[in-house]
Image 1 (cartoon, rainbow, N blue to C red):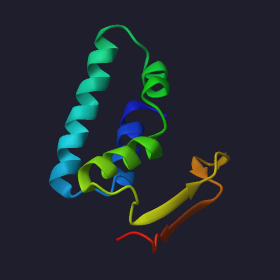
Image 2 (image 1 turned 90 degrees about the vertical axis):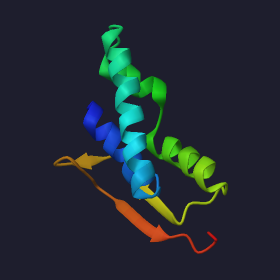
Image 3 (image 1 turned 135 degrees about the horizontal axis):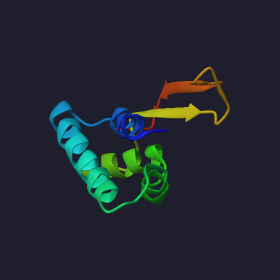
Image 4 (image 1 turned 60 degrees about the vertical axis):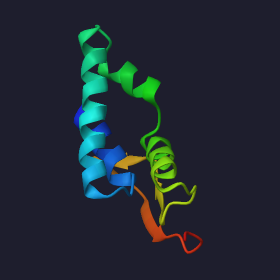
Length: 96
């Protein structure tokens, strides 16, 4: 996964309003670029930052002040032709 894909995954999974998504994109790209300038490789930066879904869940929890996102998503780790073998998105009926 490259830098753009990583940032896009976090933004798409965050469930934040558009103005917050734009600010998040700028912040994430800035953080990654500053790490690249220090000589760190993209793969190490992504590994250090963590799973996009976990980051997005934390961002949503901090923004909305609730811990449950309005949807649930599952992506299999097995990839065929660049796409996950299984990708399921469904409404989380327990979300407020």
